[in-house]
Length: 262
Image (tube, rainbow, N blue to C red; front, side):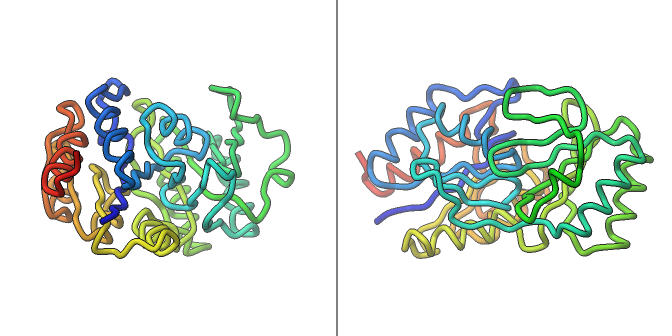
């Protein structure tokens, strides 16, 4: 019996200090050797999730940008993607620029940004019209001003049905993201399971945050980490230990023990 296992990164796979324990990586390596498919599913852009995949022994498949894309890193191929409408997106980005809000645009294997680069996979924007094409997966808006972000959200909901991902903090700074209305980790779980001919009865999801709710609801068996809030926990079938206590490894070890995987 083959399992498809989706694991969130921030607050689930990684500890609070952004590291992944050797127990977690060793357990992922062990369970994947048995033919089970461990997929990292994150709000992060593609290149960032690929970096985490390479560190953790997980499969060649990744889900990035809050469920906007499934990517096969071995074959350098998009399995499925959902994108933002160009005309509406241009209006939104022009308004965000007027508000002087920081912007991160996830496109292919890069991020286009309107402020200082953080890594070599980011490209500074010099002309929005050159950047905005029909394959934009996600846009992140960051500002120290909650007033600006609230104005921007109201503008977005007024002109479009684009999905706003529940805001949290980005390096202690308020932010939110927008994605296609049909993008979610849960939808991608179903699509990838079908692509791999794995029945939904053999799917498992592990997460901790609001953007994990759809995959916790879609998976046959779901686990919230102890550090998740009560709303997220209510959507999971089971609770595991926190991200700082190897919660992911404990779930995978339990699966291997129950299924007599050596």
